[in-house]
Image: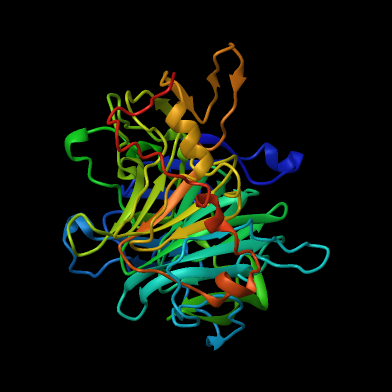
Length: 473
């Protein structure tokens, strides 16, 4: 499948579209067209590979996992990834898995947009711009998650990164990413996501001051949620996930290419003499992939009441308890609101899950004021949350006509009111009780100390002598 993805911003690159393979979790095979026949025939590791390449297997699961969950890919590369100098500890920046840095805080938390460093003041690439905001669990036992914010203004150049601890689900909010991987290249723009699975080396080019969110899960992989009574089709369709095709560079970088590894929550760096993106061909089902959120098939309530947000789950990382996730990635996409006799915004709620919300663009219906693109909020386990006072009053009196949420809707005078929010808001939800880092609470200087005030104007409407509510006129 050839798409209109382009490698750069200049005229030369605009004529060079990237190509993808369609499908989620498929067994795929790809060769760089410069080396036809690079994949061995009939076996994985022949005595001598075509083009005198090295065979290397990348395993994302235990060898003995059931076939349905076994993940691995074979890479045929110019030099194996073992060709590097020893790893040494390097600057940790703001990456951490220490969930005891500060005391727990059960309050509703909201962050203003995280500030992107100016390129004129300091060059910051994707890795040096990683900031851990919150998380839970234990890396060494492969059970947990972390939420990171990335804030960068320059490309990684002769640096790549791989994560020994878990998968990265990357949500760009400002600026597109050109991501080089061992499997090929991807362009990922705001309103798209990508997943770089555990152990895969990648490098990120940016074209402006860039910001986004990352959900990291330890020890498990993201998968499509079960559909149950929905049936065979709906939510994120497998065909809409895209996998890069093989592309290699045979480039010497004498002693100058840096491989950065996140291992047990710490960063390590090693030097090597060649580009790590020297994979000429590959086959398997363990790959990076991307997805456009506009392709989500929405399921919604069409009679009454507000359905639970689980109907908007794009990807899930399951725990050992059926129906309980280490992490869910949930979006709030464009749809029609038609529920009758219903308070249509999200209801007031206390939950046995942790809910981190981010905003890519626009506003969020339940809190149109202080929840801004590039910021976030965290409602911890059993911490109450819900619409602010203004939203409650407005929605309680609204005329319940069919309403197009996010794309705009006709008002009573025939004009158009634009709502950008829902298709650009998302949630990282987890069964684990997440702790906030020192950077999130203090160092970032983005915590909104006035968040609680959005609920202070809520007032009692209790009518003890009249059961009939005063509905909209």
